[in-house]
Amino acid sequence: MRKPIVNVRKRLLIVEDDELILRSITRALTQEGYDVLGAASAEEALRQVKRWRFDLGQGHRISAFSALQ
Image (tube, rainbow, N blue to C red; front, top):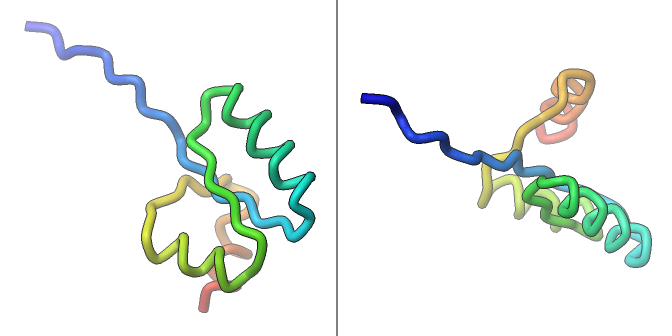
């Protein structure tokens, strides 16, 4: 029996204090098929990270973990 194909969307967190830029990036990435959450500050981003699981790009993995420590 074959397993059903599951469409798993990668979840991204975008941190940007300019609301217009944040909305534009969020909209564009959502249209590309990503599950995108936005944060307007570092504090908001930390709350999101504690609440949700995010996919980190290879180049950003070390800097993201360092920043959270």
